[in-house]
Length: 257
Image (tube, rainbow, N blue to C red; front, side, top):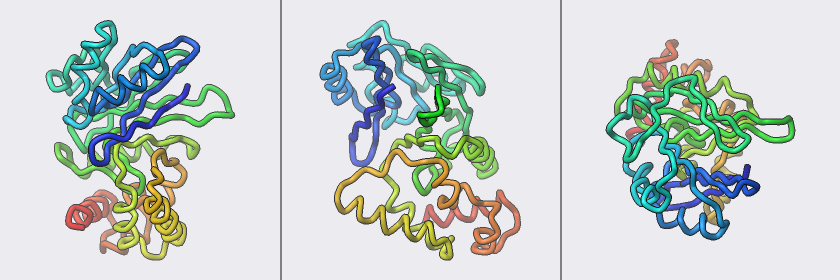
C-alpha cells in the first residue's frame, strides 16, 4: 500500500491510500476534493472509499464532490457521527474492521476531540513494514487535539488506547502542528533531552518546508506530553499526582499557549 500525503488549506493533510495492482484508492479525511481528484487522475485509479475520522468541515469538505465523481464509492465514519458526515453509509464502532485491498483496518473509538471520533489502524502484514494509524485530530506529532465535545478523562482513555500500539506504527495525523506543539512541550517537560533535540530538528525541517507527518508512535511515547500524563516529571511540572488531572492541566496550558 502506498500512501500519498496531500497538503491543503492552511495546515491540513489529506491521505490517499493506493493499491496500484488493483487500480483503486481510498482517501482519509478529504478536506477538499480537487487535489484528491488530481492525484487519482495522475495515478489512474478509482476511488472506492472515503474513511472519515470525524465530522469537522476540514475533514469532510470534499465528500460530496468526490461522491459525485465516483458514485459507487463507500463513505465510512463513526456510528455516533450519524447525520454529521456527508454521504456516510457505514457507521463504525470500536473493534469493527474495514477492508482496502489486502489490508484490513481496525477501528478504534477515540472520543475526546469530538464525541464520535474514530481512528483507522492498519496493522503490518509482514515484519518489514510498519503499521499505519490514521488518527484525525486526536493525537498529533508532539500534541493532541482540543477537547471540543469530550472530557479529559475520555481523551486519556483514547490516548491510552493509542499508546498501546507498537512503536513502529506510523501516525498520519491531519495537521502540521508539530513545531508549535514541541515549543509548548518543552515548557512542561524541560528536562527531556530527546524532546529538546526533537524541537531543534523539527525547527530546521519547518524552516526548509519539510513536512513532519507521519511521525512514529515510539517517538511520541517518549516526547509527547499528552502520552506522558503518568510520568513523574510531567506530574511534577503541573503539581498533580493524578493522571487525568495532569492531562487536563497540560491541555489547559496548551489552550493558552
